[in-house]
Image 1 (cartoon, protein in one colour):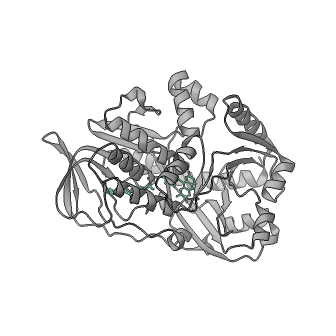
Image 2: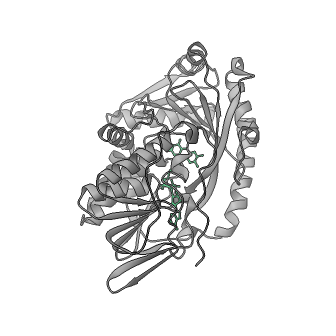
Image 3: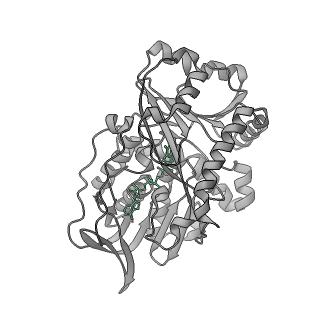
Amino acid sequence: MPAPPRLPLPASLYADTARPTVEAPPLDGDRNVSVAVIGGGFTGLSAALHLAEGGADVAVLEAHEPGWGASGRNGGQVNPGLKGDPDEVERLFGPDLGRRMVEMSWNAPNTTFELIRRHQIQCDASQTGTIRAAFQQNNVADIQSAYDQGAKRGMPVEFLDAASMREATGTDRYLCALVDKRGGHVNPLGYARGLAQAALQAGATVHGGTPAQKLWRDGGKWHVQTPTGTVHADHIVLGTNGYTDNLWPNLRKTVVPVFSAVVASEPLSDEAARAIFPMRSSLYELGKVTTYYRLDRQNRVLMGGRSRQAPVDGPEDLMFLRRYAEQLWPQIKGIRWTHGWNGQLAITLDHYPHIHEPAPGVTVCLGYNGRGVAMASAMGPQLARRILGGKQEEIDMPITDLKPVPFHGLWKTAVAARIAYGRIRDYLHI
Ligand SMILES: Cc1cc2nc3c(=O)[nH]c(=O)nc-3n(C[C@H](O)[C@H](O)[C@H](O)COP(=O)(O)OP(=O)(O)OC[C@H]3O[C@@H](n4cnc5c(N)ncnc54)[C@H](O)[C@@H]3O)c2cc1C
């Protein structure tokens, strides 16, 4: 099978500023391991790290380089929780599993920042909270209810009214917001590279430029064919999220890959940064299509959200996000936008991440619905526990069957239409 090209990272702020990458040479010949992890993003790297710490002999196979996918391109927001609020999660999944899902997912930022501390990862980590903000009247009750649900569970949450939001964000766009102090932000490429380093130090090997091209079972082992050798493993982990290909039958069809984009500005002065976003948290808006932003440590504005559904080529391609920032804070008009990039995340129809075990010795985890920085990090220990012998009941997320999304081929068009529709609805405030 011809080797597909090893692609460089897209030009991004992170590619220019993150800590250097790790040594991750392609696989060279055949190897026997206990676990082969396919995909070198947060899912694969966190799983590999925790598996190696648990004593497994692990090889990560990444088609390009660690952090090449969404993990090295995202908004860097370390956000707590799932798409549904805690009451909904407990109602849908029952008092035992539901409660454990809430506990694990809402604490996922703590897990992430703890990993960063424990492994001394240089990634500009900042635990300054996540703000979930409403600018439309019909979302005010959602914020109030999310606050009540968090507060009654003793979560570190705070309700901000319009005046407090003006103080926190320097704009009067918002009617109210929920702050969760566990959230924050990181340079995600630096974090991915630091996780790869930690996995290496724990004894895993990480192979960049090593696409898994074929997977089969024979003689009680899984075999993963790559252009430069075959890995023989007792167990396979698939952590390919929005870049899932046809390696495992129908897996690609269980998620809808969606592009999201980020545009970054030149650094602002300390005074300008204080005026536009003194709270320096991660912020995402409730709306038909999510817009999210933060300031990084050098006072750059990183504004993320809707993207065309194809790769973009720099800040000129992201005029919507630039204009949006300048509407929030008219005083930054004329600022220089230095970088613009995008990448693919994976949406599931039920909006929850999915763990599957489609065959003995195969574990799949994907579909973070734009919340993978914290969640994929927190899934690593869960996947490791399961693979190292943990019972299904010990895993804080349901393990489900693969279910292809109906009419999968039509979803790309549907996503583009949905973005256009959402943009109009948000504009009209309906
Ligand atoms: C622009 C953007 C902004 C986002 N913002 C945020 C945010 O602010 N906060 C947040 O929580 N989430 C955000 N997300 C989502 C988050 O980045 C993802 O949920 C998370 O990175 C998923 O990690 P992963 O390891 O599962 O997948 P990825 O990081 O996408 O990694 C998958 C890897 O698998 C590799 N691969 C695929 N097939 C093969 C194969 N056959 N063989 C070998 N390797 C293979 C790919 O090369 C890729 O590197 C954003 C995503 C994007 C694109």
